[in-house]
Length: 88
Image (cartoon, rainbow, N blue to C red; front, top):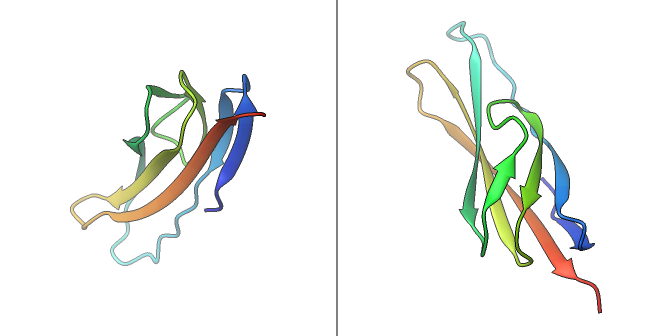
């Protein structure tokens, strides 16, 4: 997804992940948001849903990852960058 820029003290963003199941094999998609990098803790509203929110405790550059998997298949990954910065 596109990078997002927020101005501190704003500390949350909405994340809108997507994944498509091609039906082969049939099954249920599973979602998991996580922090790849960044200076502080990130709290997800619902880390196991494609669409959720992320809240940050410190300013800085963050990279968040949405991992989508289905049963025993290898997960496909989608990266999102979120860039909270202090306004000057």
